[in-house]
Image (cartoon, rainbow, N blue to C red; front, side, top):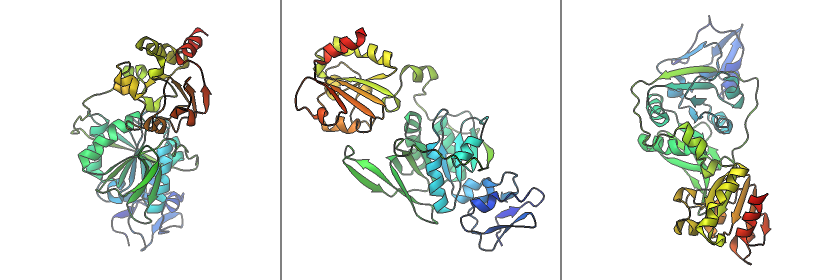
Length: 370
């Protein structure tokens, strides 16, 4: 019989949630109480699935013993990474923990997306410091995060501190059945190729492509539990904390729904500066080609290029950008790309959904006048 997992009969109500969580068919309900079979491998998947706390694992939390999968969920982030983790955990027979900074008012949405528990990290440190200390204590097999601004800022630091692999913007996950390893495919060389990555280290860290992993589970019948982990000794590791005001003022390109970008075809720094007014009208941000950055018209943070990363706007407006290979790869996942360019046979014309073949500066003036 299992030695590390105990059934607290006085708490068990025979609901059967543990049966659904067990990938090895090692749990049964007999006379209204859960019973563990000798075939139990003590993976711990049943522990956080129990809504009454009737299953208990000796030592630290279930995540530590099971090598469960953690999903870093910053406030306001879609829950798609939880659903992706659920699919991996089902293959591996392990647990999914949604890792958050504050106890949620409605944890059921995390369970519906695929989480077995909501793990609340508490302490004086920033998100990176808390995650690092928590992972060292409990040893998850992997940490996932949807590849938006906060996760892309925090998770590389977590991987570095843990001495683990970091896989950026994976667009496919390939778990090994019954094991704790996950291979991943990710874009390579401006998105023209894809490469398979086998992470190393005790805890692999992934950010997931938010376009490839957009689906969110809706299993309203799933149940779980909320668990808090106090980390008073966690060390602050964020050298550049981002305030709410700064985030509201400067939305990262990768998170923007509308990007209004300009290149040398606008003719002058003065014309380029007018893009900000159009971006404000459309609720977007300003991007720039490499040439515009080199001319000093834009900041490096505004560069639209695959050397920096892929962007995912609903609308991409390109004024006077010819479109290098790396620029075009960066905008490949925009829902709608519009090129405003009066030059024939430039690269961006081959990837744009719509082309306005007129002088970019004149079109910009006309749009601002409306």
